[in-house]
Image (cartoon, rainbow, N blue to C red; front, side, top):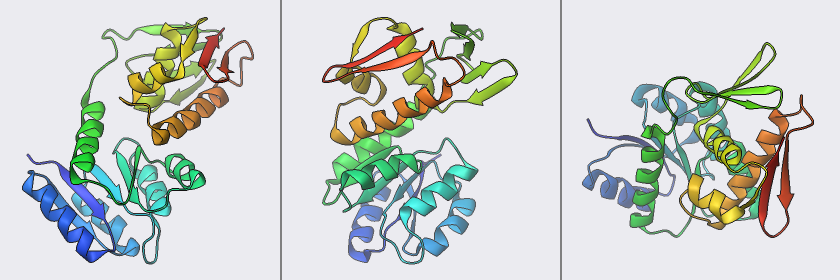
Length: 227
C-alpha cells in the first residue's frame, strides 16, 4: 500500500512539479490549492503525512495544522514555505508542525524529510513490558507515553516522550544541545533547534506540580535535568 500525502500548494507550476515527482517515487498524492478545501480532503484521504504551504487563499497553513492536530495528534506535518522569519518557524512548530522547509528547496531534501518523519513515526523505541520511570512525584509510563501524577494523566506525543526519556537517561549531567537534536531529530539544523526550544518549554510546563523537577538551560552548552 502506497504512502498517502496531502499536499497543499497554491502555486500551480510548483505544485505540479512536486506532485509528479512524488508520484514518480511511488507516493499517492492528493493536491489542494485552496485552504478552504483542505479539511474535506483530509477526511477523505486520511493521509500518512501532510505537506502544507502557509500562504494560502481562505485559510493559511498554520490554521490548517491546528485543525489537523485536533483530529489527529500523530500524522506528521511539514511546512513548505517562503516564510522564514524566526517567529514564523516557532509558530509553525507551536501549531503542530514536525518540520519546516524553506523555499526554494530540492526535491531530494523534501523526499528525505518525508521518509525520515514516516520512519520516526513507525519506530518502536520504547521498551516492552510497560516499564514505568519515577520522576519526582511523577510517573512516566514508557509504552503508553503517559506522564501521570496523583489522579491526573497526560498523553505525550512521540517526540515529547523521546525527549523526556533522553533527559531521564542523562539526568544530573550536562547534556550537549547538539546531542539532543541529533538523537531526536537526526540533525542540529536551525529549524530543529527552534523546535527543541518549544518542546523543552512544554515539558517544563508539564512538571509544574513538582518544583523539584528542573530542566536547567546551560547557556551555550545544553541542559541539565535534575530531580
